[in-house]
Length: 457
Image (cartoon, rainbow, N blue to C red; front, side, top):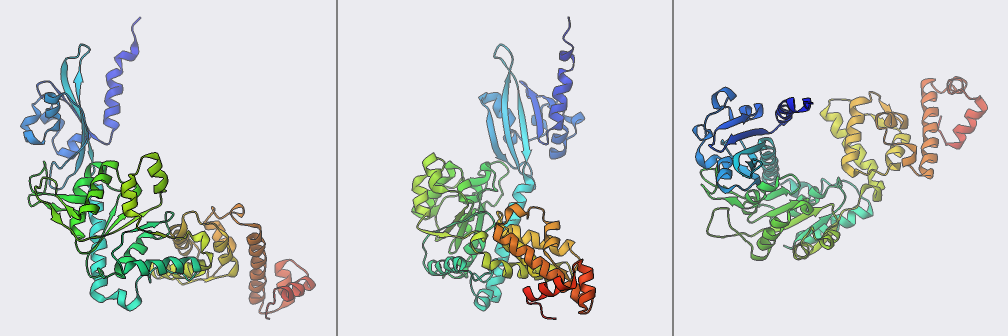
């Protein structure tokens, strides 16, 4: 009996490849295009009807065709960086294709478009650099002081800021540790602004946002003509750009092992060599690294080099999570509320005590970043002049009773009750009988509550 599934195998395979967001190319042993996906048409601007059954070398330079190399080497490659056009960046993975007898019959290439990732990374770097220049130009750090953007006066925060200011005056390498969202980059910028390098560049690298294939060129740059698609004039890497200033390595725990070796060499020798270059350039940089990972545990597991860890861990700065500095929450909430009220052109609301108690009772696993997002949501969605606990809970379901301790629950309940009594009295212009009726309690109970909560009427 005929296997009907075989009749549809091509259809299944074709649907699979066309569903992929990557460009897929298949050539035969002669270099003639057998398959050219819709995404390949979009990325390279060559229609299928023009290239099908034609030699791919007629449409691209030989040196740009990694897939043709596979026909010669018969070895697969993975995530090779390529720049087919000045405005495009791709990662190429390519493999040879053999028949059942082991004969080479062609090759397949899967090209991932990473142009947006590269441009976003460049934009973030440019924006940070421009912001740093503006701060330097107007001497904002002199007017308001380093670390002034980090709000709060709790002992835990003041201890961290004090250590940051103290170490900033030196050139010691600093490792900033803390949970996601605690403001590690703000501390890194503050250390730079409080240092003798404050008028020099502050160059950040997010080690968790750069594709593995781009790490080396991002870190060290490249000379002109060092690889296909390279800028004609070459390009300085982030290490070279930070010369004289501070290199901030965010999410250092995400750095691949092979790059850890090369970074260690930079830290030891204080020099960098561009890709394709023959000479090393001396760099005078100060290293500040940050992580939310347990690097010591990563060293034990073999995912982070021990020698690099000790190079980075000269001075450790531990940033406290928000749950350990709850006294800072009211100041942070008020600052964020004012910021977003201005941004969205809305009236700055009054926060009732019950609302603030909700903010202070929650554990904030996302730390300051999460708090900031909730306050922004509050300003956008709550159109009231006075905001209470129920309003906050309604727009932020994650703040539930199980997230609060019993003492916090009792306090929140009592404060909410007090707020309701005050609102009722205000709405009835101090008429206690009318207020009691509005609240659904007796006048005697209202008098007792007024005395209990020390409400001035």
